[in-house]
Length: 467
Ligand SMILES: *Cc1c(COP(=O)(O)O)cnc(C)c1O
Image 1 (cartoon, rainbow, N blue to C red):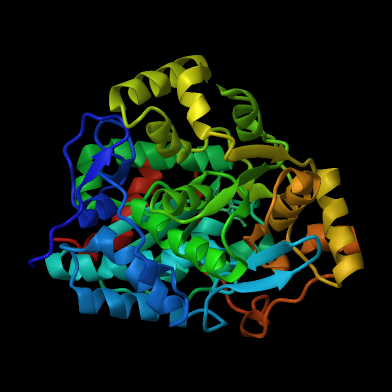
Image 2 (cartoon, rainbow, N blue to C red; image 1 turned 90 degrees about the vertical axis):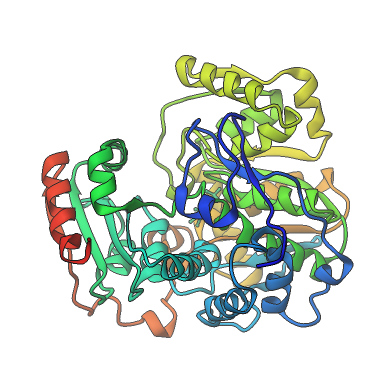
């Protein structure tokens, strides 16, 4: 391949540079940092034109990140295939409310959450690269909600991967469990762990820490720190700016900060963005951060918007890296202090680099239900609790911003029917292609929260295919 490839560097500054495909398959950098491009490619004017449709825009916006690694024709096919799985041609749809506030619906993919936008592509890029390398991997993930089903749909029936998803038995909603356990594909394996989501995550970490096991089953992950996921999300910021106009402010319901960081990436590539309003539920570490510059861990509390119930937003480190002017050693020191003390303060000079572009707002569950009810009353529209957190934040802060306010709608209301019904008295219906979800046969095993038992089970699933 003749094209120069863009190198990727770690946010902690002491890992070797990697090419796109190596960061995609590799996960965290060896120094504990996250990979980011060594510089931001510029958005050419032609890349900001949405005239040829979403797929064409996606190909041109993403190609500079990928060039020199994957074959261009194969990449273009992967992008088209990924977005052909969506219910609408141009992936995203817009709903204008009032006060120049617009919902940007990102949930028209196979599993009804915005994670499909990135994962449908990522599954295909994994397959492309692993086929080229003649390799096969075992993707293991833990889910408390939307990621598991989106990852399963992205990986089902692919020859180069097995996917094993752990969920805490009895602690995910029935819609969410069924979206994972009713997928009938030989390479998809669901495990209900007798424990909490934290137990699942601890077991997952322990599996990755066991180097011999990791190598035997060729363990891999598609979690939210994967650069390729952020990359795929940049596209809908450019698309939205084209539709709503320059100086649009984006209100983003935020958990791991992957979604909103994609907006920052678009801005650094030259997109004319008004700013970002980071919306949180009662788990408001980010609201406090954007108000004062201090990061302070608190216990995670369950809410009506479970995909935002986080303690530490892993992708925030990518923004901190920019605020520290790409000084990896300084970021490593900051994150080291944060990890050991549960709190850290960003240098005021670096914090000032946010330049009035970033804002935080939080809504508790009562506020969230009120927004769902109000939106139904005023617009006849059902929205999910994550979207409601963002819309409530946008309404509260409307007067602080000029220009359009885009509210990213991250899940279909039918994914969270109980909260929607509680607020409106109306139970949202699943789209037709999922209407028989509750009749489909489920397949999963229940296992104790024990590392040895889980590892033996994973090996028994993939052993016939390895080696
Ligand atoms: C994952 C998720 C979020 C949070 O996105 P991040 O990229 O983790 O900030 C918000 N809403 C829904 C519905 C999600 O599934």
